[in-house]
Amino acid sequence: MRPQFSLRQSLVALLFAAIVLPAAAQNLPAGLQPIPEPPPPPPGMADDSALEPQVTIKKRGEDRVEEYRVNGKLYMVKVTPSHGTPYYLVDPKGDGGFVHEDLGIGDKGISVPMWVIGTF
Image (tube, rainbow, N blue to C red; front, side, top):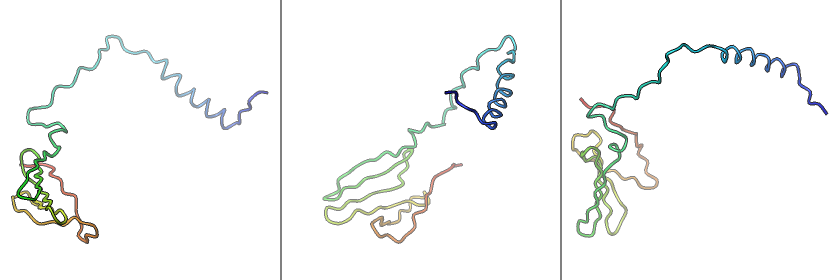
């Protein structure tokens, strides 16, 4: 039993061959060389691992305090008391002024993503 092709399938195959075959038959110019490796990034440009937060965990009495830093700058503190729910102190503007944030279940506040795009 022979497979039967529709007119549409035949036209698609013919169109494909008309595009691919001339492209494959092109002669490449002589003396081509591979592209050189890109130069290393300039000093001061950080890789992705530098953007990962560094977390320092400390015990203050019965409380557990986690300090989150990026590039050595403290931006968030999570305090987990021995009894109760954890709470966060966040520096929303990056000026060292920390604000108390409750990130519990049923929190009605809106947390807007804030990333530092560039500093001057």
